[in-house]
Image (cartoon, rainbow, N blue to C red):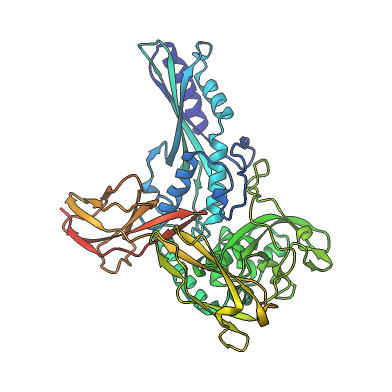
Length: 549
């Protein structure tokens, strides 16, 4: 039936062009099976970056898609949760439009419009940029656990006759597919989460698990914390038995952070992606810099295959590798814990057993400009740094976060025995304190600790109710990347029906839709600043309420 529709569509295009009428069409493409693969476009940036999204020179439309994916993963109003929230539905396909390309159809192509459009799409760098930025989002945000690693894209086009110039002008719209009814494709794991309500329920469980595990593994410093987290994940999980036996059939769930957070064994046990995603999710929650790394790993018997692990930044300011998967598959629980590039396990240096590529798809530019690993394994410092607080509000001035230093006997080390250097302590983001010891403590390793600087809290200027909607106006806050408005009929903002609306920095007003007439809704707002692929949020404002018309 679909092939017949496509043939009829081609015939109609040819007929309409001859008659000089407007024409339109559509097509889908994805990286899977034998479908066409598009070449790389975005180039690697100079420098070193933590977030995947910051590592390539993405055009604005790709960065806007990255933000849109995040904004639409927060609650039931997002298209990553419920496909009904997409921009449009076309031929049974629920799509979010990303960008457009326009131009003139050469006279030589007037009778072969579809072939011309296909050629334009084939030459465009838009598809590869969309694939790459989606891949960046997938690895930067393991909390969005229900989406698949491989997206499907779609383009639609229209051709119109410009009566002034006599030219045929085309417009191509590129979209990411959330659900394709005819092709039986869904960007979400509908095997595990059959409805949007299932996703919302799983999100609530995710939040509960993250809170519980974070509390359980948190220690006095980042090294002890990641050690406890590694041990916890190894204890509650066993690596997937199907994959271990080289038997196909593991579910998508076994690739997700939730699989490792919930604890699973046997054929439901997590694979490397799930271990790494869960590890990053908890580290993110605890404020420990952590990145996902993917590449090729070679076992002691010489077998090489795709693999995923983590790198973490510890209190000495250096990065170390942690492979929870290999710590849970026949090795010692700490064999691959906070190791450096030259650390040898089974007589093989880590950089040789774990070769980083960070490629979403083999033909694409790798996200390789990540922080470099320390050469050696982490050596625990015999002192403890205690911050007075870990989060400060932006003031416009340099912030010197207060702290105390204790030796291994829990005795306070006086200020005269160490030098202090602050870095990145004025603008919103992550501030850094470097402590270098001297005098009788000169043998202690230099240590670094971190604190967050968050933007000023925003406020709601006014709320005007309309039919099933409300117009919200905010007071402008300088220096922020945007605002997040939370809306709920529940004063605790815990109901699944709560809405989150993002307003970009160039605007201070928005229309919140989909509200029930006659109900009282409560609104609050917080500001955020984006830095290194992460959002730093202010506190929420006071709550304002209004009855919807």
